[in-house]
Image (tube, rainbow, N blue to C red):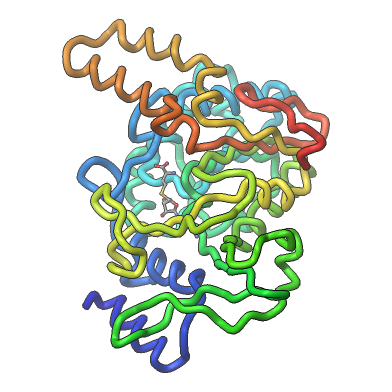
Length: 358
Ligand code: SAH
């Protein structure tokens, strides 16, 4: 048994079953044994890979989209350039290299990284040398200033709760012990005032909520609304949160979420409708990642980069372009949602929200 599994067993034996959110938070961010606290999980040798690790084009195009928003809003100076959960710092390195083409932009920027993992903070300080980043623990700690922000595969790592529709109420999915092993269970059904938006859920169906995600978007939306700025949130998920998407990945393979606490990445799909509803600023329409990147000109950028490559490097580059954009790969599973002040132009690559949608 892993040290974290022992801690979980003792705690459940003493206090009873815990919510999926408590389990997820302990597994990912326990100060000594948490998955992110103790390692750099990214890349081919790690457990999973992400869009910025697949190709430099991803960070470059996101950087240019934010740069156009900065120009559209009158080049506010100074401003905070921020990233939530920057991983290895690759996205920000590529984005800032692209922003370097915009006169005055990097000079006006204060780079702030929201990162919980000491291991990844160390990795980010190496990749972002020369940009003098500062680290904060949460969005609430960012300076009050115009805010241009990116979050890729951050919201999917925030702790979720899961509820099953049962009669007039909801049974919450919990993690307990069964015959000496961690096992899922259900609480007695009870009314849940916070689940009013899901009232029409059919009996027996499961929904997922993420209060921390809503709190974060509320805070960054308030900043964007009062100081100006833009946020791009990229993640896998959809408009709504039906069905069980809580999953664990280890060595690029799905494993049962209770099998290896602290040793596997745990995620759940992001409910973009809940994020949009929580933001006190305007949001864009939700775009599939492939459409977003194609609109920003990824194919032309890919051709330019391909001109300098031959053999295996060229093949890998072509495969990376496909992986980021093709609907059968990351192109439609991953989505992009933007946030801007009411009335401001939306970041390039995205369309204004259909008002009827919310
Ligand atoms: N954005 C990066 C990394 C994604 S992995 C990329 O695309 O490659 C998730 C990142 O979020 C990691 O950096 C992890 O340490 C960080 N993270 C997870 N939960 C967090 C929390 N509650 N607060 C701050 N950072 C968190």
